[in-house]
Length: 128
Image (cartoon, rainbow, N blue to C red):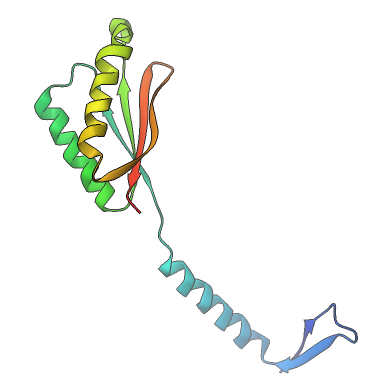
């Protein structure tokens, strides 16, 4: 048995006689149980190119829906290489808006499409 100080700010200080090792063990069990119940939200990333064909685009949209059903956020990235950057505001923006329209009923758009360097980025998350 150990003498454990419970309330240090009280006047006079409050102490308790207890088995300190058993107390630490029960505390760690509670922490492990709390950790099991928490949900971890990951951010998945799907990458496109401006010349991605319709079938491949639909396949990647299915993959995004799968990630959203698993309660993950998805970062949708369209990369532009070389002279493709000219198409960022036309083809790129239209493609991301099309993806957003198809996903509108399955998700919440967290960040609208915007340019970050040579890539166009959009974040979507699962509906609450």
